Structures are given as structure tokens and as C-alpha cells.
Amino acid sequence: MSRGGGGPPPEAELDLDGALTRERASVEKALEVAVARLQPLLPEGLGPVVRHGVLAGGKRIRPILCVAAFRACGGKDDAPIQALAVSLELIHAYSLMHDDLPCMDDADLRRGRTTPHRIWGEVTTMAAAAALIPAAALQAWTSAEALELEPTEARGVVATLLRAAGASGMVGGQALDLLGEERALSPRELDALHARKTGALLAAAPTMGGRAAGAGAAVLDALGRYGRELGLAFQIADDVLDATGTARELGKEPSDRELSKSTYVSLYGIDEARARARERADAARDALRAAGLRAPLLDSLAEYVVRRRA
Ligand code: GRG
Image (cartoon, rainbow, N blue to C red; front, side, top):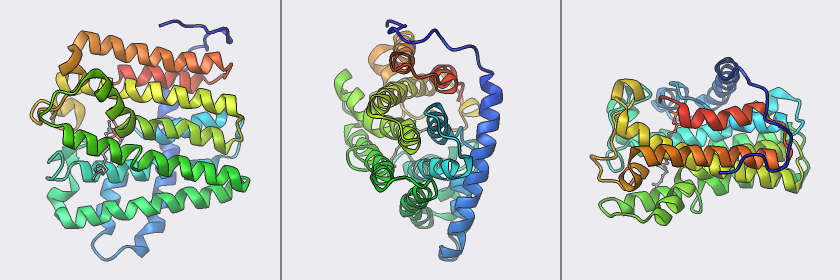
């Protein structure tokens, strides 16, 4: 995969671990606020489930991508963008809670902890997770207002989130995944599935950040391409980790083989899957460079998604 594209020279090295620690701390604070706002509205018994599902760890890559893109596009105001960014994490949290249910992956462990349905039961977990979907939409809408976006931009930001979360994005991808179990998918089918299931929300994150900062069409296009490539790199790396990692390392039981899923590893083997993840990450970075976007954190995050250990 070519690097360069005529843009500025490669970014100076960034202390990614330090940056991630700082960014995660900001995300956690904003998530605490979002969850606290939801607590009094929830029927009795759902509060702790929401806290467990949203606040119990996680890499927080989606909100970090959103904030990083916002800053790269000249955005300055931190509190409202953090609030917007966590709308992505609320959607992500609900999806993991549902994904772990017995009718889907039937998982006991997530982020090194017992899954909520094993503690509070399926009905309570399903309801608590479902409450996060409209909460996320509201969170996106109120923070678009706080960012004082023009109505068109505000609508665009919220629509980007909801489209990525919905039938043409994550939910559609998950449905394809469930329906495709026990069947060998072609490379094209697997890419299409994961572009929706995992890629859509990851691609929405930088796009929302860019839109919130008032980026123009060319930059938004580059952020979209960056996000789509990074999304597929992330999923390929996820499949490699599932095939090579232990429950202790991953914080969850590896499950792809047990569920007879088509994965990038079943399709290509571990070495080629790793190489393909790296190609996608390079393509993501190329998209930034070709648009002349100086974005050291976004650049490093593309590297991070393929070298992460969990
Ligand atoms: C009922 C069809 C239907 C859909 C409901 C369950 C669901 C919606 C969607 C599932 C989406 C899903 C689980 C996608 C997987 C994405 C993925 C690779 C998750 C792991 O993300 P990380 O590694 O997790 O960012 P952490 O724990 O770090 O937050």
C-alpha cells in the first residue's frame, strides 16, 4: 500500500500511551455525567446494570477518535465535544451488552468482568441496554446544541451517529453476522458485514468530530475514508486476537471458533490477516495525508488498532 499521497511529511512521533491515558480520563468523566443524567429516569433495578455496561472499562476508542478528529479540524471547546463523543460509546456499550446475551454470543466475560446478564438476568440487561439507544441519540442532540452548531451541521452529526448505529450500519451488520453463522462467507461478504457491524460506528466517530468542528467536504471525505479503513483494520486485528489471545489477555473468552464464524483468520490465516490489517491501517493514514490533515493522534490510532493486545 502506498504511503505519501503528496501531503505533508509523516507526523512526529507521539507518546500514544500517554495521550490515550489522558483522553480516556476525559471520556470517563463525560461518561459519568451522561450515566448520572440517565439514572433518575431508569426504572428501579436498571441503574446498576447501566453503570456496569457503560462504566466498567473499555478502550474508549470511538469517543477518542471523535475528539481527535474535532481537534484536528480546528475545534477548541472541550466539554461539549466530549459530551458528543460519548454518544458513540453509549451505542457501543448497548451493543456489547446485547451481543453477549445468550441469543447472540452467550458470553460470560467482557472487559475482564462477568457479563451483566449473568448477574442481573437477560430481561433486565436487555432493557438497560435498550435504554442506552435513545439516551445516545438525546446525548448527541443536546451536545450538538451545546456546540452551537448550525442546524444543518447539528442534523448531520446526529444523523451520522444514527445511520452508523442502524440498519445500514451496526445493527444490519450484526444481523448479517448472526445469519451467516455456520456458513463460509466470501471475502467480499466478510468485508461488507464488518464494514457495517464494526466499521460503521468507528467510521462515524471521526466524521462526527470533523462535522462538529465545521470541516469542509474534502476533509470529511478523508475522515470517512480514514474511519472505514481503520474500522476494517480494527476488525481484522480483533479476529487475530480472538484466534491467538487468552481470556486473561482479552478480558473475554475467545469465541469465533466455537461459534463457527467466518473470520479474517478462517479466510486468510493469521499471518496474512495481520498483513491485511496493517495494509488497512496504512490506507487509513494515507487518507489523512492525502487530504493534508495534520492529525498526529488519528495517525497513531491507526497504528494502535493493529498492534493492541486486547
Ligand atoms: C439484534 C441484530 C441485532 C443487533 C443489536 C448486538 C448489536 C446490536 C450489535 C453488535 C455489534 C458488535 C458487538 C460489534 C463488534 C464490535 C467490536 C469489535 C467490539 C469490540 O470493541 P472494542 O474492542 O471494545 O472497542 P471495548 O471493550 O474496548 O470497548
